[in-house]
Length: 158
Image (cartoon, rainbow, N blue to C red; front, side, top):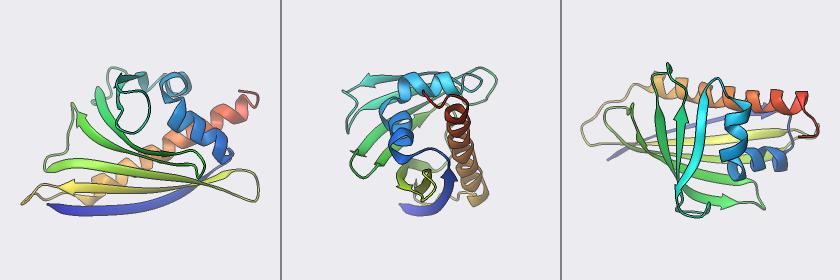
């Protein structure tokens, strides 16, 4: 099995504790509320919310992607670190066994966060993967965090 790793980071004008809470701890209630044009629902289908938990995210119609299942790997509330594996999807990249996403939210002097993200694509033997598609997926995640940022800038008491 091969491995392709990408690292990226981007700034978000939301403190790490708040960003961690919305993205890692209260995903099921807040992300569909913040991104109703993209995400229909998010729900735990197995587990208690800790490591090993399986979450299903359902997207609105017309996006091509209708659902994904994620397995929570780690949650470190003290260090604002979180990781999950993408284990199932209706649109799966040929040749990919699984994808591991590791996130760490680091405070900035201005009171916001730097989101450091490592994506690890585990590639099936003999498969070839286009790295451009993987980079494109990283931009979508940055867009999600920018939507979270916009929500909290518009609703500072949320």
